[in-house]
Length: 190
Image (cartoon, rainbow, N blue to C red; front, side):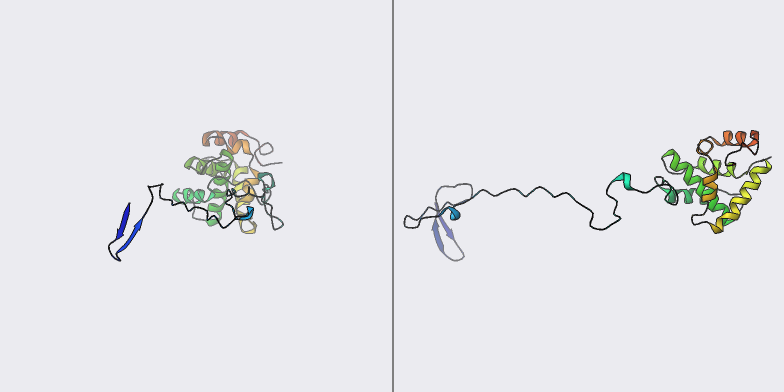
């Protein structure tokens, strides 16, 4: 087959098509050594195991700290602040918002989901925002509000004092439990 490059007038002859690759023969007067012969290409080596290069790097889920100041984070704790902000609270006190948001985040994290309106309703019930709330619930709310400015995480006193079993109840059940419990057996009392 003859090829002509019309721009330069260059003519060439090629052998029958061999999938785009031209094979060049070995010259008889040159002998190839073993190192000059073509070799198979090797695959990349398997990846080496990663090891932490700095002390304190977490390498497994078991090493992730929890409890104390680390707590147990829910799927989206920031969403709780938005849900609380859209809720009509009885007061515009920022300390109250912090306590309500902390209880809302704790309930949502315990349920393994983002915060919903029901979480805010339970938090308001725990703070005694309903008709005829017991005196000990109102006193506890005042203690929680007084503790907020001194806490590293605002609302952590409230979260620490409320048991998980009451935190996961429905708002009506929380009202009933707080109304019918004596202050000595109430949630959070020791």
